[in-house]
Image 1 (tube, rainbow, N blue to C red):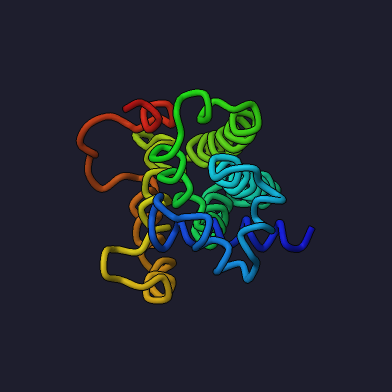
Image 2: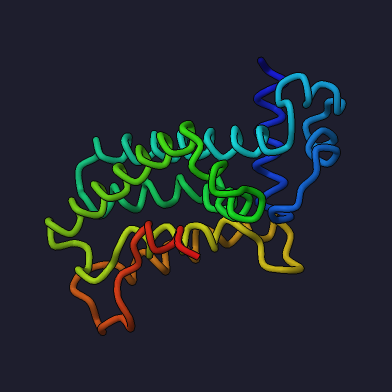
Length: 198
């Protein structure tokens, strides 16, 4: 079971650092195992990607659920967001969209994990909004879009350099979500559904 976890962690890290086009060979090298070990656990690349995405979505959903137990709705939202960038949750989104057809994106395991995650995020935002701590023109898609962007290093930037600044930049963004809003946002609030629609 330890090798399986190492393979999934390696796939997540590689996706965050290099984007969607990581190969089984690269993942195996990062995990410190042979290709045969990867194929023993995952019969093909889509199965590996699906499991890596599902594991990250489940972990991020757990973070949302844990944050909901905290007092202070906006503080809970911040704790969740910082945890999600630690997990590089958003990096997996690009992996899925670039490498999967509709049937793969709607795999029951992924759909269940996505539903759980979206419910947790929506509840965090609703609580902060109802408490008057979150500006009203922000949607779950706005938050997840930024978390996705922060999870991936800029071109030419190493993952280590990205990790050095990600929490600082995330906090700058989160401060912009606080109510009362200092200025209106252009456009409409992004929904999670809108982020999935090409």
